[in-house]
Length: 180
Image 1: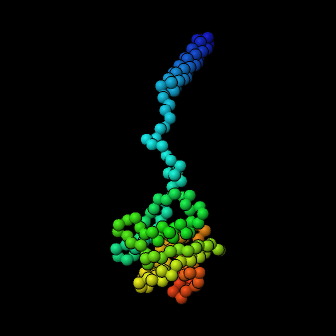
Image 2: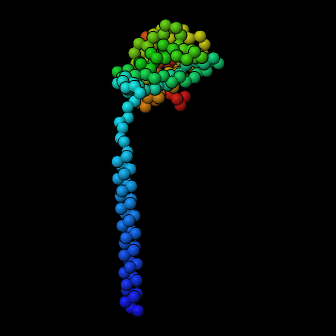
Image 3: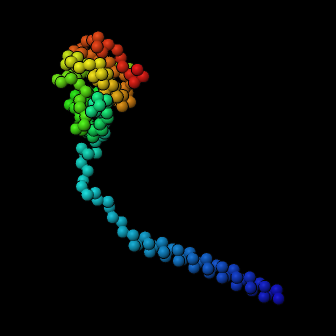
């Protein structure tokens, strides 16, 4: 009787070991078969990405909409153009005007940016005298806010100061920040 119990336990352990080996071997074969059937293809884009496309970045510029309010326009530009003087580059984009038909430029005609400098997180913008040809206080307000919103998207800029022909002027006599 005792021998029968031992024999039964040995047969049961042997069956468990065989079942476990069967599943291990089956899983190993399935894994190898799936790896053999997997075809590794390199991703090939429809067109090659140029170095210019890799350098592109999106900037937000602010122009006037049909209701005379500031409106955003996203513009894709080559980030290399921002390396030398990003402040002047962004202002030149504003002066050139929007690419969207429903927006108009903020600045009076013939306005030019002469120079920009950054000091203590304040960008000083030196414009030509044409900047003073704005029509009314609303346009002046939009000019200031267009400049401020466009330039403060750069982390190092917190405020702006506006000069005309290297001099302070009564029309733009303070330092402007988003907290104003």
